[in-house]
Length: 590
Ligand code: FES
Ligand code: MG
Image (cartoon, rainbow, N blue to C red; front, side, top):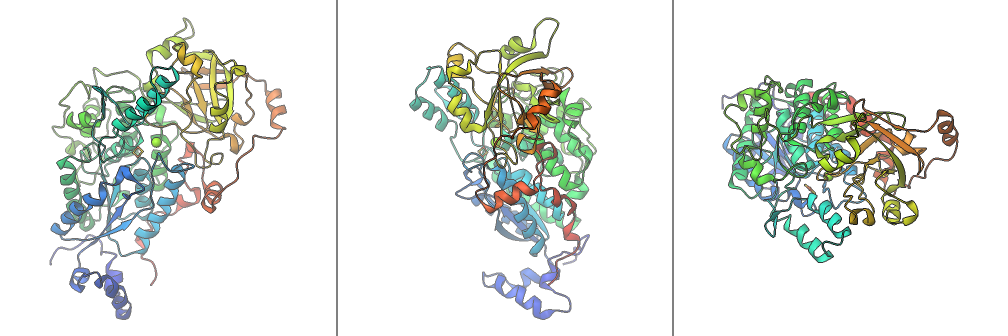
């Protein structure tokens, strides 16, 4: 075979073990017991790892268990040797106390696997929310050729002629339940109808968002994100991804050659255009930090806020993944941004070509779902970064602010975009559920619901709890949402216009720790300020008192996670880990 890699394959150091034929024999013999031949392992072919994120515990990614056969076929046909291995499970809506704990743990495990075994390049199988950022973070640290392959979303969910989307149907049905419009059995039917097939969430929640982000970063083949899991194109995408990673191994096309500040800014712009999940904020920052890219917390506002919402998909819009895919998916959205001069088209991607080259002739074929840049669903639809005396950083997803909410809170003549509300403070979600319907709290439309103890240290891990529902009595009067604020996250499938990811969190001594029920909070969306109207003297007095209690760690990892993980503003990464970059440049010792 005459084909030469741009950089010697690192697996040679194991299977040829120059000067240590005794070691090579040891490395080879046990792989042979599964039927691999010495020729396969020693003929100079690249060993292609496949990080398997699907399992019975991760149903969103379970399609990968069969899809992997198509990946392996592609790898073989292109002249590589596939080796599949498991990734630590991350399942968003079942993992207690939160799947946020798993992202950094899966990252650590994947780094050790990619670094410590004879792997020359890797296919990262993704799907459920954090499987994507965890995989990309690890690929950045190790810096071997890597490509992401999503398992794809579920088919569209239908209930009695109405589209019901993952997660979003839960939040909306809870309000109907509280209003007495449906019973629990109907609630259950609506939820199950939203999940009609294999695949991840079919809304523009965190899973769809993060797979779209991978495309915008240039880390997957064009169109990868949105193909539904059961479609034939999904298997074909798996095959092509397998083929392409072998070429990438020969070309030594690594994440460090693909990921630049410009590609991360492209990702931020895409998140606005698709109406993406607020969880993109910590995940994009985490990937950038592990890639060594200088991304700034307020890039979300300076680069992304002014852009329009183009994708009409739940929770910000109407439709679901199947229709989005058929309209052209992520490439059609990137195409709109490119035509409008809002995408850096010169960025290199895993295809070996630039974004602009990949996007040729990718225009939307369904304007009901993917709008033209000049005729969007909503103008100025990005994340707004806020700061003030309660926190240094928090974000608000403006694309989900309903007209009703705008009218009620943000449209007062002379004070547009400004509102003041009385704080009702909850210490974690148990406290919220216990007390939200307590008449003594006297909650009315002039209130803002605040939750603390939901961040990286406080929860621990940071929980999706900020999208708090108003008391039943208010919902029955037609008030579907109140302003909310917190140091936790919220589900990407939620349509609540919350102020969230507040950093520093209460448990790290942030301003929410001294906030009291009854305090007035002033939010000014024009200036990006959010302040409690409490005097400096009073704040100092309260700070001298005992802070809110933080629950004990219940596992070793919870303790270690709390000790080593930074705040959401900075991506909630293991701070000490970002200095390790390009570990594959030096193979580990024998
Ligand atoms: Fe896994 Fe939504 S819960 S993708
Ligand atoms: Mg989520």
